Image (cartoon, rainbow, N blue to C red):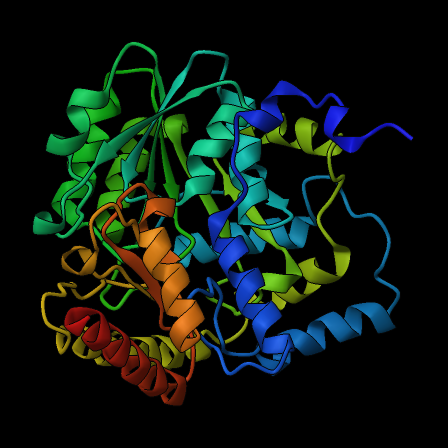
Length: 399
């Protein structure tokens, strides 16, 4: 048999890196399966179960044999429900023809990249950033242009910061907020200014709104309405049911934009996955059209956890961390605790080894010196994790 090390792989594989977040989660899960008591601050998913009425919709779909192919871009009912949800929540003008249902948020983003980005095209991405953004641009043959935001400015994505990165090759401005990993949000004026920045250019404004329904303050809806009106068909959204409805494993997302772009995504999808899971589509339909009350409860709980975990970090000498505007991550600056030649990857590995606390190193998001810590875990685990981390950093300071 041929040695696997000599097998030829496509060049695109060598151009991307595996998800570091998933790698940390996998190690935490391995240790837990072996009986170790791990406080997992690495998880990028809600600890809440999928609400019962949503699960029941999935069960009913199976019982009613709704287990065959659906139309490639999704059922008409779900596509309309997505459009209606954005009209109600943000006042945005979409119809079902402007929506494609995908197998999760990542799939929605990749479909848009493959539909819009040619070889050599540039996609501007503020950092710290979710690594998948850049890797998908590369998969599409484009070039990710990473623009650093600053801790001093709350990691805010502003037109002033972004403008120098815009060139004649820019195809997409990709904005994710509340942001992974910082929880940073931007306000009405900043959204409008970013829309103005690309208004007179052939550039798409793409909002990844994965955590938008978990914002601690109202979203800048009026600004999004203004940007959509100004840009018309160049205003895009990539969304998902995963975070807001605690449906990560159901793998349901959506892309929204002009009909010509959505049809292009559908053509691509027809050769990749066909349709998204029929059962998950039924569950997502219930999630989007039923009472949104459980969301408010989750937001209240996440806001409490964010403050408590932040307070715990601030009790550690020389650690800085801001309060996020939404989502379920903190991005503390622990650079003062790094030893000579050490990276946050080294420190995170030591933290997991010595105290069984799993975090994701800032290097994975383009900014060393930071740790992404998820507070998508119970209050009890947060208290336990705070104690372990304080003990860990105290020991490092005295060694």
